[in-house]
Length: 139
Length: 178
Image 1 (cartoon, chains in turn purple, green):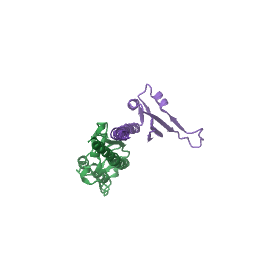
Image 2 (cartoon, rainbow over the protein chains, first blue to last red; image 1 turned 135 degrees about the vertical axis):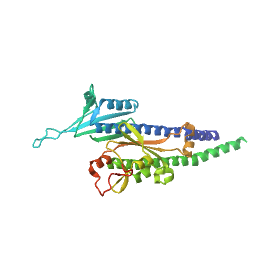
Image 3 (cartoon, rainbow over the protein chains, first blue to last red; image 1 turned 90 degrees about the vertical axis):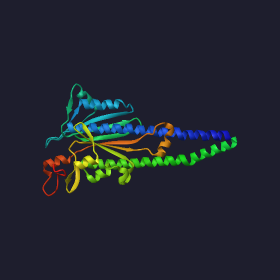
Protein backbone atom coordinates (compact mmCIF):
# COMPACT_ATOMS: atom_id res chain seq x y z
CA UNK A 1 0.00 0.00 0.00
CA UNK A 2 2.88 2.32 0.89
CA UNK A 3 4.39 1.71 -2.50
CA UNK A 4 1.15 2.59 -4.32
CA UNK A 5 0.74 5.74 -2.25
CA UNK A 6 4.29 6.82 -2.97
CA UNK A 7 3.84 6.17 -6.69
CA UNK A 8 0.69 8.28 -6.66
CA UNK A 9 2.60 11.05 -4.88
CA UNK A 10 5.40 10.96 -7.43
CA UNK A 11 2.90 10.93 -10.28
CA UNK A 12 1.09 13.95 -8.86
CA UNK A 13 4.37 15.81 -8.38
CA UNK A 14 5.38 15.12 -11.98
CA UNK A 15 1.96 16.28 -13.12
CA UNK A 16 2.23 19.51 -11.15
CA UNK A 17 5.77 20.22 -12.26
CA UNK A 18 5.49 19.46 -15.96
CA UNK A 19 2.06 18.92 -17.44
CA UNK A 20 0.15 21.76 -15.79
CA UNK A 21 2.80 24.45 -16.49
CA UNK A 22 3.18 23.12 -20.04
CA UNK A 23 -0.59 23.43 -20.53
CA UNK A 24 -0.47 27.01 -19.24
CA UNK A 25 2.44 27.84 -21.55
CA UNK A 26 0.52 26.42 -24.51
CA UNK A 27 -2.50 28.53 -23.60
CA UNK A 28 -0.31 31.65 -23.44
CA UNK A 29 1.05 30.89 -26.92
CA UNK A 30 -2.49 30.45 -28.26
CA UNK A 31 -3.50 33.78 -26.72
CA UNK A 32 -0.60 35.46 -28.49
CA UNK A 33 -1.69 33.93 -31.81
CA UNK A 34 -5.18 35.31 -31.25
CA UNK A 35 -3.75 38.70 -30.37
CA UNK A 36 -1.67 38.75 -33.56
CA UNK A 37 -4.76 37.92 -35.61
CA UNK A 38 -6.70 40.74 -33.92
CA UNK A 39 -3.93 43.24 -34.69
CA UNK A 40 -3.88 42.17 -38.35
CA UNK A 41 -7.64 42.56 -38.61
CA UNK A 42 -7.59 46.02 -37.02
CA UNK A 43 -4.76 47.17 -39.28
CA UNK A 44 -6.51 45.83 -42.36
CA UNK A 45 -9.74 47.62 -41.46
CA UNK A 46 -7.88 50.90 -40.96
CA UNK A 47 -6.08 50.47 -44.27
CA UNK A 48 -9.46 50.08 -46.00
CA UNK A 49 -10.84 53.05 -44.10
CA UNK A 50 -7.94 55.30 -45.01
CA UNK A 51 -7.76 54.33 -48.67
CA UNK A 52 -11.56 54.06 -48.98
CA UNK A 53 -10.87 51.05 -51.16
CA UNK A 54 -10.04 47.38 -50.86
CA UNK A 55 -6.59 46.87 -52.35
CA UNK A 56 -5.67 43.50 -53.82
CA UNK A 57 -2.16 43.67 -52.37
CA UNK A 58 -3.37 44.41 -48.83
CA UNK A 59 -5.99 41.70 -49.08
CA UNK A 60 -3.41 39.17 -50.32
CA UNK A 61 -1.17 39.98 -47.36
CA UNK A 62 -4.06 39.64 -44.94
CA UNK A 63 -5.05 36.32 -46.47
CA UNK A 64 -1.47 35.07 -46.40
CA UNK A 65 -1.25 35.85 -42.70
CA UNK A 66 -4.26 33.66 -41.97
CA UNK A 67 -2.96 30.86 -44.17
CA UNK A 68 -0.14 30.50 -41.61
CA UNK A 69 -2.66 29.84 -38.84
CA UNK A 70 -4.93 26.98 -39.93
CA UNK A 71 -6.84 27.11 -36.65
CA UNK A 72 -8.31 30.48 -37.55
CA UNK A 73 -10.37 31.64 -40.48
CA UNK A 74 -11.77 35.00 -41.32
CA UNK A 75 -14.78 36.49 -43.02
CA UNK A 76 -14.82 39.84 -44.70
CA UNK A 77 -18.07 41.55 -45.53
CA UNK A 78 -18.77 44.84 -47.20
CA UNK A 79 -22.26 46.26 -46.75
CA UNK A 80 -23.39 49.07 -48.98
CA UNK A 81 -26.41 51.13 -48.03
CA UNK A 82 -28.42 52.55 -50.90
CA UNK A 83 -30.19 55.81 -50.23
CA UNK A 84 -33.47 55.81 -52.15
CA UNK A 85 -34.67 59.04 -53.74
CA UNK A 86 -37.43 60.83 -51.84
CA UNK A 87 -40.92 59.59 -52.65
CA UNK A 88 -39.76 56.19 -53.92
CA UNK A 89 -40.56 53.14 -51.91
CA UNK A 90 -37.57 50.82 -51.75
CA UNK A 91 -38.15 47.35 -53.18
CA UNK A 92 -36.70 45.00 -50.63
CA UNK A 93 -33.98 45.82 -48.16
CA UNK A 94 -31.87 48.81 -49.31
CA UNK A 95 -28.61 47.23 -48.16
CA UNK A 96 -26.41 44.99 -50.28
CA UNK A 97 -23.94 42.78 -48.47
CA UNK A 98 -20.96 41.32 -50.30
CA UNK A 99 -19.22 38.39 -48.70
CA UNK A 100 -15.62 37.25 -49.04
CA UNK A 101 -16.22 34.99 -52.05
CA UNK A 102 -17.96 37.70 -54.02
CA UNK A 103 -15.29 40.24 -53.06
CA UNK A 104 -12.52 37.88 -54.17
CA UNK A 105 -14.29 37.40 -57.49
CA UNK A 106 -14.55 41.15 -57.92
CA UNK A 107 -10.96 41.67 -56.91
CA UNK A 108 -9.66 39.03 -59.34
CA UNK A 109 -7.45 40.70 -61.94
CA UNK A 110 -7.96 44.14 -60.42
CA UNK A 111 -5.72 46.25 -58.24
CA UNK A 112 -8.47 47.54 -55.98
CA UNK A 113 -12.19 47.91 -55.46
CA UNK A 114 -13.25 51.45 -54.71
CA UNK A 115 -15.72 51.49 -51.86
CA UNK A 116 -16.67 55.16 -51.47
CA UNK A 117 -19.22 56.36 -48.93
CA UNK A 118 -22.15 54.66 -47.20
CA UNK A 119 -20.14 51.46 -46.91
CA UNK A 120 -19.56 49.37 -43.82
CA UNK A 121 -16.74 46.87 -43.57
CA UNK A 122 -16.75 44.03 -41.11
CA UNK A 123 -13.94 41.59 -40.43
CA UNK A 124 -14.64 38.57 -38.25
CA UNK A 125 -12.16 36.01 -37.03
CA UNK A 126 -13.27 32.53 -36.03
CA UNK A 127 -11.11 30.09 -34.11
CA UNK A 128 -11.60 26.33 -34.00
CA UNK A 129 -11.87 26.56 -30.21
CA UNK A 130 -14.91 28.83 -30.47
CA UNK A 131 -12.92 32.05 -30.40
CA UNK A 132 -14.57 34.98 -32.14
CA UNK A 133 -13.41 38.51 -32.77
CA UNK A 134 -14.98 41.16 -34.88
CA UNK A 135 -13.90 44.61 -35.94
CA UNK A 136 -14.81 47.14 -38.54
CA UNK A 137 -17.26 49.92 -39.10
CA UNK A 138 -17.95 52.72 -41.48
CA UNK A 139 -15.46 53.44 -44.25
CA UNK B 1 17.50 4.32 7.02
CA UNK B 2 15.36 3.65 3.93
CA UNK B 3 12.24 4.09 5.98
CA UNK B 4 13.37 7.55 7.11
CA UNK B 5 14.22 8.56 3.54
CA UNK B 6 10.82 7.41 2.35
CA UNK B 7 9.12 9.39 5.13
CA UNK B 8 11.17 12.43 4.21
CA UNK B 9 10.13 12.10 0.54
CA UNK B 10 6.49 11.68 1.64
CA UNK B 11 6.70 14.83 3.73
CA UNK B 12 8.29 16.89 0.99
CA UNK B 13 5.77 15.70 -1.59
CA UNK B 14 2.90 16.48 0.78
CA UNK B 15 4.21 19.98 1.51
CA UNK B 16 4.71 20.59 -2.19
CA UNK B 17 1.29 19.29 -3.20
CA UNK B 18 -0.68 20.85 -0.37
CA UNK B 19 1.01 24.24 0.04
CA UNK B 20 3.67 25.22 -2.47
CA UNK B 21 1.96 24.25 -5.70
CA UNK B 22 -1.46 25.80 -4.88
CA UNK B 23 0.30 28.96 -3.60
CA UNK B 24 2.30 29.36 -6.81
CA UNK B 25 -0.81 28.64 -8.91
CA UNK B 26 -2.78 31.32 -7.04
CA UNK B 27 0.11 33.78 -7.42
CA UNK B 28 0.25 33.17 -11.18
CA UNK B 29 -3.53 33.47 -11.52
CA UNK B 30 -3.41 36.79 -9.67
CA UNK B 31 -0.69 38.07 -11.97
CA UNK B 32 -2.75 36.96 -14.97
CA UNK B 33 -5.63 39.04 -13.68
CA UNK B 34 -3.38 41.99 -12.99
CA UNK B 35 -2.10 41.76 -16.56
CA UNK B 36 -5.67 41.65 -17.90
CA UNK B 37 -6.49 44.74 -15.84
CA UNK B 38 -3.44 46.57 -17.22
CA UNK B 39 -4.45 45.61 -20.76
CA UNK B 40 -7.97 46.91 -20.17
CA UNK B 41 -6.59 50.18 -18.77
CA UNK B 42 -4.21 50.64 -21.73
CA UNK B 43 -7.06 49.91 -24.16
CA UNK B 44 -9.13 52.62 -22.47
CA UNK B 45 -6.30 55.09 -22.95
CA UNK B 46 -5.83 53.96 -26.56
CA UNK B 47 -9.50 54.44 -27.37
CA UNK B 48 -9.43 57.86 -25.75
CA UNK B 49 -6.39 58.88 -27.80
CA UNK B 50 -8.02 57.52 -30.94
CA UNK B 51 -11.11 59.65 -30.39
CA UNK B 52 -9.45 62.79 -29.02
CA UNK B 53 -6.58 62.85 -31.51
CA UNK B 54 -3.94 63.69 -28.95
CA UNK B 55 -2.00 62.34 -26.02
CA UNK B 56 -2.09 64.51 -22.94
CA UNK B 57 1.12 64.83 -20.98
CA UNK B 58 -0.56 63.39 -17.88
CA UNK B 59 -1.58 60.30 -19.82
CA UNK B 60 1.89 60.09 -21.36
CA UNK B 61 3.46 60.20 -17.92
CA UNK B 62 1.08 57.50 -16.72
CA UNK B 63 1.73 55.26 -19.71
CA UNK B 64 5.27 55.90 -20.85
CA UNK B 65 7.36 56.88 -17.88
CA UNK B 66 9.53 54.17 -16.43
CA UNK B 67 6.60 52.78 -14.59
CA UNK B 68 8.58 50.90 -12.01
CA UNK B 69 9.53 54.07 -10.16
CA UNK B 70 6.70 56.46 -10.86
CA UNK B 71 4.09 54.70 -8.77
CA UNK B 72 1.73 54.50 -11.74
CA UNK B 73 -0.91 52.41 -10.00
CA UNK B 74 -1.52 49.01 -11.52
CA UNK B 75 0.57 49.92 -14.57
CA UNK B 76 3.76 49.76 -12.51
CA UNK B 77 3.64 45.99 -13.02
CA UNK B 78 3.99 46.17 -16.80
CA UNK B 79 6.25 47.62 -19.49
CA UNK B 80 4.41 49.60 -22.12
CA UNK B 81 5.83 50.57 -25.50
CA UNK B 82 3.97 52.79 -27.90
CA UNK B 83 4.76 52.99 -31.60
CA UNK B 84 3.38 55.79 -33.74
CA UNK B 85 2.93 54.72 -37.35
CA UNK B 86 2.71 57.38 -40.00
CA UNK B 87 3.04 56.89 -43.75
CA UNK B 88 4.36 53.36 -43.47
CA UNK B 89 7.03 54.34 -40.95
CA UNK B 90 6.86 53.67 -37.27
CA UNK B 91 8.71 55.40 -34.48
CA UNK B 92 8.65 54.76 -30.77
CA UNK B 93 6.92 57.37 -28.65
CA UNK B 94 8.86 58.05 -25.49
CA UNK B 95 8.48 60.72 -22.86
CA UNK B 96 11.38 62.56 -24.51
CA UNK B 97 9.72 62.58 -27.96
CA UNK B 98 6.39 63.61 -26.51
CA UNK B 99 8.01 66.34 -24.39
CA UNK B 100 9.89 67.78 -27.37
CA UNK B 101 6.83 68.02 -29.62
CA UNK B 102 4.07 68.94 -27.21
CA UNK B 103 1.82 71.94 -27.56
CA UNK B 104 -0.87 73.61 -25.50
CA UNK B 105 -4.50 72.73 -26.19
CA UNK B 106 -7.24 74.24 -24.03
CA UNK B 107 -4.66 74.94 -21.37
CA UNK B 108 -3.41 71.36 -21.28
CA UNK B 109 -0.06 70.16 -22.61
CA UNK B 110 -0.69 67.60 -25.32
CA UNK B 111 1.11 65.72 -28.05
CA UNK B 112 -1.00 66.02 -31.22
CA UNK B 113 -1.63 63.18 -33.67
CA UNK B 114 -2.68 63.36 -37.31
CA UNK B 115 -5.69 61.62 -38.84
CA UNK B 116 -4.84 58.03 -39.72
CA UNK B 117 -1.81 57.79 -37.43
CA UNK B 118 -1.54 54.26 -36.12
CA UNK B 119 -0.88 53.67 -32.44
CA UNK B 120 0.51 50.28 -31.59
CA UNK B 121 0.67 49.53 -27.89
CA UNK B 122 2.67 46.57 -26.65
CA UNK B 123 2.21 45.61 -23.03
CA UNK B 124 4.65 43.18 -21.47
CA UNK B 125 4.81 41.73 -18.01
CA UNK B 126 8.17 40.22 -17.06
CA UNK B 127 8.11 36.90 -15.29
CA UNK B 128 8.95 36.97 -11.60
CA UNK B 129 10.79 34.38 -9.56
CA UNK B 130 7.71 32.26 -8.79
CA UNK B 131 6.83 32.06 -12.47
CA UNK B 132 10.36 31.10 -13.40
CA UNK B 133 10.20 28.33 -10.81
CA UNK B 134 6.76 27.22 -12.03
CA UNK B 135 7.94 26.90 -15.63
CA UNK B 136 11.40 25.57 -14.76
CA UNK B 137 10.78 22.06 -16.06
CA UNK B 138 9.16 23.34 -19.27
CA UNK B 139 12.46 24.89 -20.28
CA UNK B 140 11.03 28.29 -21.23
CA UNK B 141 8.95 30.87 -19.43
CA UNK B 142 6.16 32.14 -21.69
CA UNK B 143 6.11 35.93 -21.66
CA UNK B 144 2.89 37.76 -21.09
CA UNK B 145 2.55 40.12 -24.01
CA UNK B 146 -0.43 41.87 -25.55
CA UNK B 147 -0.59 44.30 -28.44
CA UNK B 148 -3.42 46.54 -29.44
CA UNK B 149 -3.73 48.83 -32.42
CA UNK B 150 -5.66 52.06 -32.72
CA UNK B 151 -5.88 54.45 -35.61
CA UNK B 152 -6.50 58.12 -34.91
CA UNK B 153 -9.87 59.20 -36.32
CA UNK B 154 -9.81 62.90 -35.72
CA UNK B 155 -6.27 64.19 -35.37
CA UNK B 156 -5.62 67.34 -33.37
CA UNK B 157 -2.90 68.36 -35.86
CA UNK B 158 -5.55 68.75 -38.60
CA UNK B 159 -7.99 70.48 -36.28
CA UNK B 160 -5.30 73.03 -35.42
CA UNK B 161 -4.57 73.59 -39.11
CA UNK B 162 -8.26 74.16 -39.83
CA UNK B 163 -8.41 77.08 -37.45
CA UNK B 164 -9.30 75.44 -34.21
CA UNK B 165 -6.50 77.47 -32.70
CA UNK B 166 -8.32 80.66 -31.93
CA UNK B 167 -6.64 83.36 -29.96
CA UNK B 168 -7.13 83.10 -26.25
CA UNK B 169 -7.79 79.40 -26.15
CA UNK B 170 -4.13 78.61 -26.24
CA UNK B 171 -4.74 76.04 -28.95
CA UNK B 172 -1.89 74.97 -31.14
CA UNK B 173 0.85 76.91 -29.41
CA UNK B 174 3.91 74.76 -29.76
CA UNK B 175 6.24 74.83 -26.79
CA UNK B 176 9.25 75.20 -29.06
CA UNK B 177 7.59 78.20 -30.67
CA UNK B 178 7.34 76.49 -34.07
